Length: 193
Length: 275
Image (cartoon, rainbow over all chains, first blue to last red; front, side, top):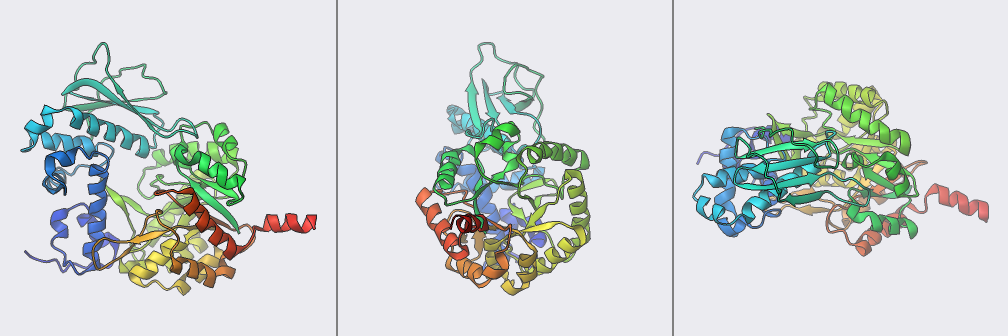
């Protein structure tokens, strides 16, 4: 392996490596730059497995058989890592050696849909109050609501509609709600990359 | 020096009320953009105390103008109703080439000054309010250039600095930024943050701003050594705790801060009047 001797005076010098296990491995482990990148990568790891611990049942306890190849795949596709982070993990799992076990139990899908809905409610600063996420693998919907009262946090709902909505054209679709009511179906939007 | 607590989500509502009722804090700082779907009037009635507004996700260095104008319009609703003691924000990077950082990125102070300055001027103009910008808990050596950067920024933009004391401790431990280099910034600043930090899990160990631990001895020593520079009329110190939030632990740290800085000036005044 070739170790990098790139300048690493500032955080900015490390930006390209902050979400790449492959690039981190090229920094000497006794340097601060390696630890800085390691800290960053751990955030991605914890954001995934602390919120969706079920995925560790597939991967084993360290999660690396999911985390490393997913991060490499996400890097190739230049995924934005916005609120849809978890949905892209599911999309990767669905075409990975874990596919059969993934599809055998819908708890994994419920978990990633809820996690992404919650992440939208945490991160989005637009005017919308809620997000509805649908998946071609289920007729159930997951809704994430932003904080609507000073005493409440964000809320996540699993909805089993009596009359299912049409399936999203892609694996996942979403739409947002301008009030705290699920009273519209404007059609599905595709995930941004 | 007024002491405050950061209120980030409804989970800690009862605790913050108790901190106020028992006199451990004098004001409350809202992480305001978490509450953009809450009626400003409801927020104004939430706590019977002065308020600070701290912004997390304006992303003013990266967002386009229409996005910032809309963000600012909603922020103004809260400024107008809550009449905050201060409005603060962050100078940091949220993305690189369109991909989000989960551990936020620090700018390069030596090469980005002009672009950041221009953004700061524009952002304050859009909000229509002076903004206090928080210093980063630097890890890499470029953090040594932060004090001069913030000092110049204050002079050239009219912006304030929300000086995070424990971030300065992390920067000192990680890249050797001298505490003395911050003296002029601290002297100019009126609003402060302080919290716990922890070490990285792998060597060479670095210190990470986590808001999940008790105040460290070197943080308290820094506050003590610079006490007269921190403490001034109108000054506020917000204790940040976002994780592992235990009431008794929070109170223990607040008591240490109260011992260090004494009673807030308003209370001293009240005591003088009643004496």
